Image (cartoon, rainbow over all chains, first blue to last red; front, side):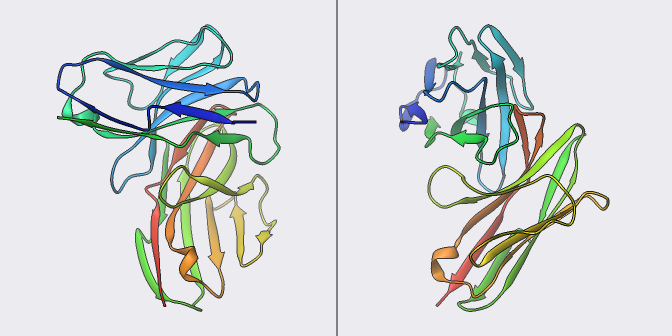
Amino acid sequence: NAGVTQTPKFQVLKTGQSMTLQCAQDMNHEYMSWYRQDPGMGLRLIHYSVGAGITDQGEVPNGYNVSRSTTEDFPLRLLSAAPSQTSVYFCASSYSGDRPYGYTFGSGTRLTVV
Amino acid sequence: EDKVVQSPLSLVVHEGDTVTLNCSYEVTNFRSLLWYKQEKKAPTFLFMLTSSGIEKKSGRLSSILDKKELFSILNITATQTGDSAIYLCAVAQGAQKLVFGQGTRLTINP
C-alpha cells in the first residue's frame, strides 16, 4: 500500500518553462488536493478535487492548472513557471469519513524556479 | 476570511521541559481540527479533534479543543530532542480542504 506518491522529488526549472507535478493515490480516496509550503508559512491550498472530473480553486490558484480524469491521479501543471512558484508542493488525499488519518500527504516536491 | 493562527511561532526549550503550543481559528464550515508534526518531509498526523473538552493523548503528547473560544492547545511533557520539529495546526473545512496555521518551530536543546 503506497499511499500518496508524488514525483519528482526535486525539480529545477527556468522561468517560463512548463511542467507537471504528478500525484497518485491507491487508497480509493474521493478527495485530492495540492498545497504549497513557503518558508515560515503553513501549507496553502492551491486546487482541490472532490471526485473524477470535478476540481475547484483553493487560496492560491493563479499560475496552476489541474484536472482529475481518474480517482487515482491528480496532476498539477505549471503553465509558465515564475520564481514566485519556488516552493515545496504537497499532494494530499482524503475521504469523507470521520476516522482519524483521513488526510494523507505525499512526501513533497521541492521546486526551484530560476 | 478563514484563518488559523499559531503561537508562538518559534520556541526553544531544554530537554525535559514541558511546552504548550497554541492554535486559534476563525474558519467557516468547521469539521475538525488537526495537529501535525513536520520534520524534514511531509506532515505526519498527531491528533484530530472534533468535540470540545475531550483531551486526546498519545504518550507525552496531548491536545484539547475549545469550540466555544475557537482554540486548541498541544502539550508536550518531558520533551526530548526528537520532538524538535515544526508543529502545524489545521482546520478541516468539510473533508476536502485544510486551512493551516503558520506553524510553531520547536527546538529542544539537550
